[in-house]
Image (tube, rainbow, N blue to C red; front, side):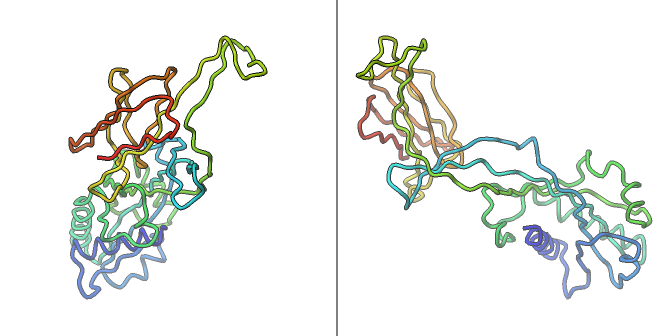
Length: 282
């Protein structure tokens, strides 16, 4: 994945500075003294010096998705992926300081134009990322001790700027589970009798489904508001378009959904529902 990220950044700089006929080299090396001594032409170097989880984007959960093509009445449950910060130290190298500074400014302008990496540059696993690849140039809390970094590299201090790209890493495998349509809750610690009945039993009902967009071949809708009218219950759908409500009593309900663009739909339903199907289509 990191090699594909580096290639995307290389193409971004080539197109945006722009660079023609290889007049400027783009490298992703440790800027050690012996490395810089071998340079024979102006160079932009993006040194990946730190990779860590982005805790601000941490979202631990186990969303459910349809098990398309799999066993009937089953769903897939999978942990949300990791969001990782890839931190680069960007430097430029040339014979004259003025040329070096001019190249650094051009590089910063090229990187700053894109708060997310353009999709046209994403290849391989980067093209399959579930989230946009956010970028951040010159963050105040990065490269806070440049003298220590240059000392460890055994090289002289020179102007540098931090550049961060947030990538998604998904090490988890989905688990197949049966679809939950209805559940029963037993309260007060009383066990059911031989017939499965209890005087203090409460039955819970689940309304679960997927919000889909008919304008996009039934694709799941993320960021939509799904609500049960008259109950005050609502949620915002995630990437899979799934919604789940748990109710304590049966009855008739009105389920409504509103797309971020304002399009809405409504459906009347009753609980219990033998079919157990509650999908919504915009």
